[in-house]
Image (cartoon, rainbow, N blue to C red; front, side, top):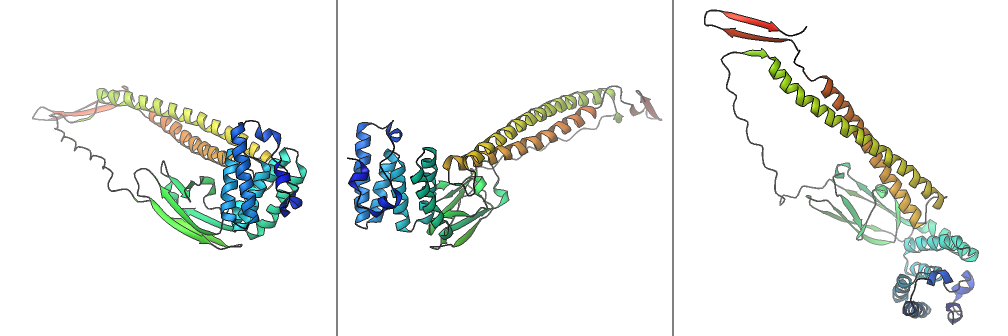
Length: 341
């Protein structure tokens, strides 16, 4: 018996015109998986009829994790709404509408979109501002145990009403924790994440050894060809190496720039309107922002390295540099000048 027949007494069915999950959604599920998902789905609906929404949502979440279906998604979104989890319900209604639209299920798409639109004015939002000095390697921000992408820093994102925990961490630094509470309807809150402190338990880098004192030679040389030649050759080599790294960095920056444009185009295809409720579209948008940031870093860094390499190479002294030295025989001073001028 289909899910529709078993739960036809629930008013939501008449409102949405929901039916069982489409056949393609079951394509990769085993027989035992289907049975488990059906059983959990039935239990969730029964609990919803009894008004036990906390338990009902849990059963529907388990059913959805075993076998994803648009019908289960719509019921779960309604269950979230009954619990006051407006942001979760809104996001799930939008996702269900997007999948239904892609699958040619017009009635479900319209129903999900209408429910999401009705919830949108009630959404509460949380903004997390992160100190710019926290751009160290490995920095992560977590909200309620889930990593927040860098593209969401400073953006008011919809969250479920209630208390939310925040954690910032990075290797070699002490973690920071905080919390924020948002109200039931159309509330907003903001949290600032300060600069992380270095972890004193981490071993400090050894201090450099003091350089040995130089012994003055009996003859004071202002400049010598040998000295300039030995100094110029390593400088030219360093210039070539640094310039080459800069050229490679410019190439990498160009690659990330092209990647960012491609991902942004894909994201716009999946999310023609804003805000975007399509999970893949949001991920593509985040990836595009990350690629654009990497492109800027490599392009500016590569240009700086290439310019530095050119300066080092062309300013290195050569053996033909003019030289001068002063010597003494105990009775007079002698100035020797040589080289090309």
